[in-house]
Length: 122
Image (tube, rainbow, N blue to C red; front, side, top):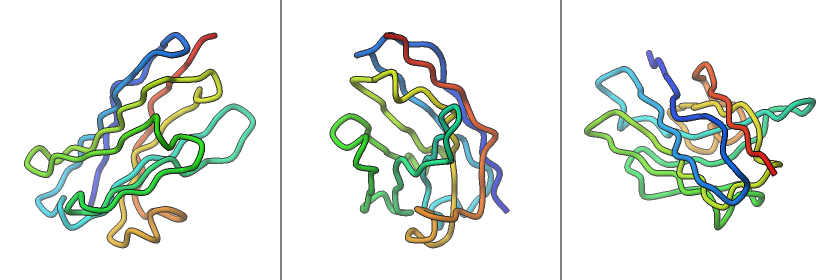
């Protein structure tokens, strides 16, 4: 089983950067695709980014392409989301997610973290 704990959220000015981290439990971390969803006030949860177990394949929502970068360090059982050029519309609770199947993770991931708040001020 997988347990996920996010960190790194906070308040940042528009145009600034944040790096989110997600620490995963388990000795089979590299077998799981990992990713991030977010949920803004009054909106449904939205896919943000995903990365394959090896780190060789990544996917991004159109809204964050060119600004966000997902990466992972399997030796540390950790996945990251580097967020640059942040906009007020990026304000949301960001959730770390995991699934054994990359394509499934982008829509219905099996495992979710508790979420971390990201607030971008104008």
